[in-house]
Image (cartoon, rainbow, N blue to C red; front, side, top):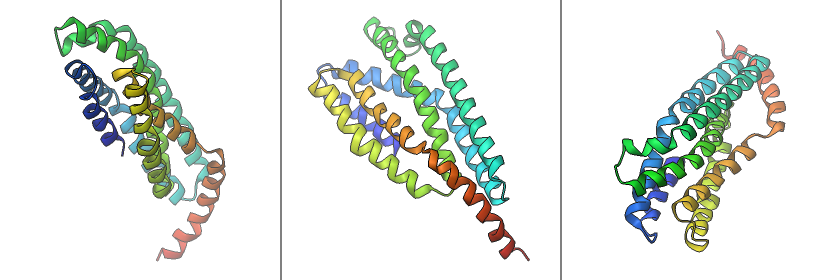
Amino acid sequence: FEIWSFEMMVLLSGLLPNPKLETSVLSISLNTCSLVFMIPLGLSGSISTRVSNELGAGRPRAARLAIYVSLMMVAMEGLLAGTLMIFCRRAWGYLYSTEEEIVNYVGDMLVLIATSHLIDGIQSVLSGIARGCGWQKIGAVINLGAYYLLGIPVAVFLAFVCHFGGKGLWDGDYSCTLCASIVTCDPNRMYRLGERGKQRKPLTESIAP
């Protein structure tokens, strides 16, 4: 769900007043975001496997500990990567273009990318936790609603009605990531996580030879 919403954001940038500049900057921003997203993506896959294994073994406390550790790790990574992007924002654009207008615009966008990367990383890990717990349907509904029913309309409103341009598209698309993180991080699910761990053990024993 997520990647297509960002691709749609790049397509929408072609309708802005300066399409060449906006499309170039948003393409660079998306490329940068995809580059730094590889670490949270790896953590997402790891925590999904770890949680499913621990719950399958009837160890909900170990699954909960793994969740806390993964969230702490992705938060630290987000802060470090965000700080690095902010410090390098005036030079990063030169890796893609020599035009000062594009380089300066990319520098401004990197401040937004640094903030959104932290939120995006946490959301990625939370999605991995949901998959590991067997809540794929819940995660799919949350992401579908957040990205397409909230994110894209907000992005269009900020960019074309409020005239924030490419920054409006980016902020709007990441408002849905924040929303999805808040909805996915439900404290009540931690209780259900423990109950699910208790239920898995008898199920495993019943199918064992």
